[in-house]
Length: 289
Image (cartoon, rainbow, N blue to C red; front, top):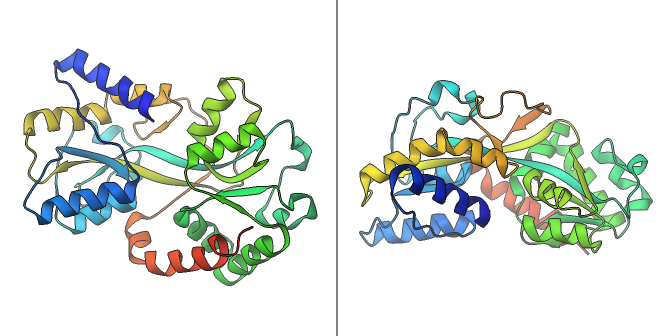
């Protein structure tokens, strides 16, 4: 993501003569920093771009402000929140990545039940915090059946839990993890384009989470903040496409062939987070080999 941020910053500076100063961290750390600073009476951020559920959390904390943009009509419906305090910029598409030297195409699972096959023993990996993907897959299958299935996959074949999608994708490329259940499409595609023995696909329906952008309730640089907010929904979308991200602006990638998507509901995920975090820890992270 750093190279993509640098590309966005360079394009924004070229257009407006304004240099971006950004701080990168995982979504939970981003939220923690913003909330902690706000409670101390500080609003050090102008704009935030992160995962949808975390943005929904900042909305509920009343740390964001409603904004408009002429680009709203061009966005996919899932990108525009009813309260308009954050708006989707890109999709994190959860896909399965595999090492093409170690996994034959004809072996690829066509359903999640296929991961119960003995050939996958000791060959599967998963990201440590993909609770929303897990919840969506379980709900799609049916909660009782889905939870039972994941318990059986872990018991029979094991799951190697790794923290970070970029790291996990790299381990697929190196062969340490022959097959990863949860990698972001842009991580896998970048490796593939660079010649790594990696390919990817998604069992249908693919799970997608909207990432978004929001304005601080009290930005220190309000005019620049609004310009960057609008830039991310307009010209910045083409830069995201170049980085292999799926944009929310339909004009940025009008010919893209979409897989059948099931979107994470950020508000529902936030409401149910305690339940699904407990189940993910109980079934996946604590039991994995």
